[in-house]
Image (cartoon, rainbow, N blue to C red; front, side, top):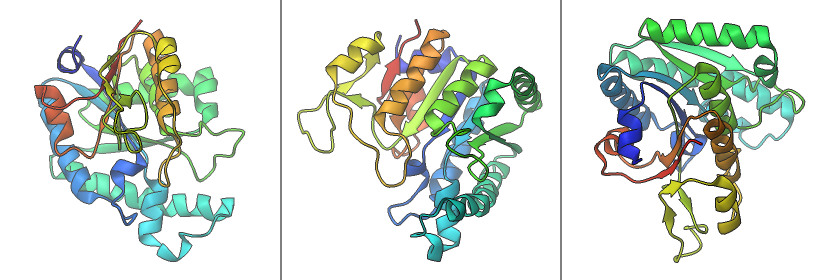
Length: 264
């Protein structure tokens, strides 16, 4: 299966956007990306697809708003920063999707929400209702109340849990890399893109896993973890570079590359 075929054959798609994609080099919100992304989502919706978006960026948005808090590392400041930033993040998403004539709905989760069967059922029902009515759910972890005990920790795994709960046909992760490489392409010029993964265990044995960077909480490890979760449930996962202009359109027409984790 090609990336193009995976998208065209999927009706229910979860798309995760990482902090690195939503942040400019100076750490402020990339509103140009958000506007372009909303337009591409409208294109997919007009083709009969239903979308759920998992969006990082609360802390980035908070720093954009309160620059003097950027260096404060205390957990309470970080949670307060996310509380402020989440409002700014959703304000920009609302503006971007409103320009396309689409409504959004905000859902904030913690680890407990997926571990409690009653809460999970409510999440599932809310997602179905929103997309059936033509709205786009925007999901993030509830960073303002999450602690280590109740934290999912990263939105790669959050998006995987969401895809499973919603019974999605495809999970797309947008990051700051083109996909999974044999080594870190930023430091190894011999690194090659792996375009299709059939066995994740074999992949782990054949690549070098690096660290995350300053904006994100994940890295390639959490993306592989997300693929391990979804593919077991028959949901393929695509990892691609959100910085590529009109990336959704280009993946759909076959002119952009990424790594496709095939479902088991």
